[in-house]
Every structure is written in structure tokens, then in C-alpha cells.
Image (cartoon, rainbow, N blue to C red; front, side, top):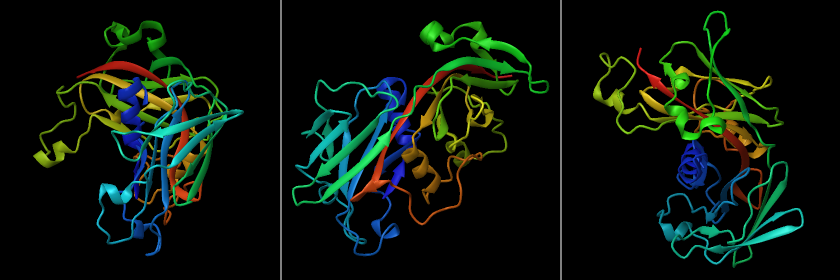
Length: 317
């Protein structure tokens, strides 16, 4: 089983112009034998991210299969399970999605996710297997300023416009036209009690030119440059986050998302044996034999985050 949390951020960006993936779905790509002993089959796997101020998410419930067994969709699916999401005195019963096996849908009246709340998911399979997990959602975060700093003096050269001020017009105004690798982009955030942060970046163009000198690269190397990426988990103790130029490879409009992570997300990213944390340093520690799941009765990824974003257009020097 392997989790790709980037896929979560990408999914959420598409669904809500904000987020569920740079980085963490608990699909069963990694062979169960790489995480458990040879007899560990039929382990329930939960997959969901709650994002503050977004609607309750779909839940995914699957199961592991024996090492060496044929990995088919039917073998991974747990049908007709009962899934309930609880917060305070409210509970929300999920129903199977008839068009997607393993996906469970929230009720139509489901509210948005609240900050600083404990959410609990409980799953029961028809054969009696049960799973339970909890997440405490982070406080809301808000980008208060987006600044371009002088690289040597660290003095403010200019202040860029925010989505809260101009909406999608931030990509067009002159203040948000930046030159590749000229100055330092810094986000200043409201206070938060998050365990860690993560940055995700998306180039919103389909075929804009590469900014990196490609003369010394062959075709295979060029194909490795993505229009999206993410940082490892980061500590942002002073509320200031630098947006790294090495995450930008193409001209055009860019959207940076800043995630405040709950403990479950942070634990998973820092302990996933298949993850280098996104590269570029950060809070990723020693490699573990298996991720920390924080799930009782199963494995998977049940986590939460708060998110805000900034946008600007990158031009060639």
C-alpha cells in the first residue's frame, strides 16, 4: 500500500481551487508484504482528508490483499460497509457510491468542516471487522501578506495582491508579475497551532515555456519537470514562509497553496518509507519500516488541514 499525498492536493485543487493532493491517498499500490507480514491480508484501509471550510469529503474504504495475490479492483473493495463520521454531538452516515466501488458519500446536507474540532470516523464491514480514526482539525490560516524581498538586504521590494483582494485578477495586475529568480517571495501567515506546514505549487498553464536552461538536458530529463510539486513538512514558527524558486520550472500563472497540517498528516508524511518528503529539506526524519497511520483496527490516512493560497505570474528574465 502506498500513499500519494500529492494526488490529494491536486484533487482538492481541481475540486475547490484549493485542495486532496500534492501529497496523500492511501491506495494499495505498495504491496502489503512490504508493510506487514505475509499473513496480513484483509486489513481495512481508510482514506480521507478533511479540509477546513470545505464540505465533508468522500471516504474511501478498501482492504489489503495477500502478497503475491492478483491485485484486482474486486479484491480490494469492501462492499456494503457502514461508515459514520462524528463531530461533537452530530453524526453523518455515509452511503456507498453506486458508480465507484470503495467510495462512500456524505449525506446531501453535510456541513463544511470546522476548525479546531475532533472528527471521528467509524467503519464496520459486513463480516464484523471495524476501524476507527480521529483527527483534530487545525485552526484556520490566512495569508496576510505576499511580499517580494530583496535577496541580499531582505528588505521589502514590493507587496503583491492577494486573492482576497482581487480574486483571479491577481494573475493580471502588474504587482503580481514577477521575474524568475529575482528576489525572494515570502508569505506572511496568521498565527496557527498546526503541527507542521506543507507547500504545494501548481503551474496553471498547459504548454508555457520551460524557464530552466534545457541545452544540457536530454528528452528524458525534460519529461521529469512537472507543473506541480510539494515541499516536505515544514516548521513555520514565525508565520513567514519563503516560496522556493526551485519549485518553479515554467513560465506563466502559478498558484501556491499553504497547508497547516494535523498530526495524522504530519506523522504519515514524515514516516512514509517511500517518501523523501518532497525534497528540499524540512521536518522529515529518519526513514521508518512502515508509515505511522494513527488508525485503530486498520491502516490508512484520515487527516485534516487548513489551507490558503496565493497567485502570481512568473516571467522569464
